[in-house]
Length: 71
Image 1 (cartoon, rainbow, N blue to C red):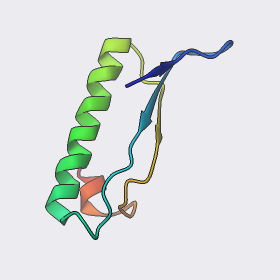
Image 2: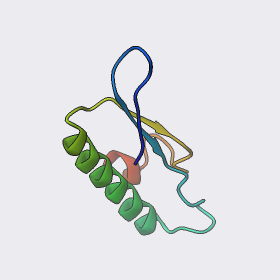
Image 3: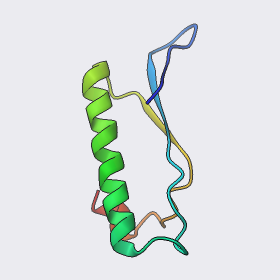
Image 4: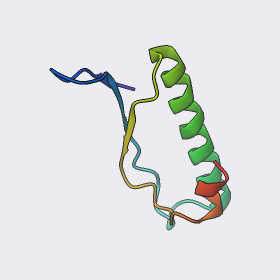
């Protein structure tokens, strides 16, 4: 995952997360992918020593769906 160091401000971790559409992914697949994304982000935050993370992309889930809230 790339890091961004702006000319002023804090180092940031930028995450692009275009997850598969519901047409091509089951609920279980979405849960698995979102949990893995969360783990990958946490690992990179530990490596970088900060939690200044911006997630960009379409997760293809509603904010209150189990796939997202469980993660």
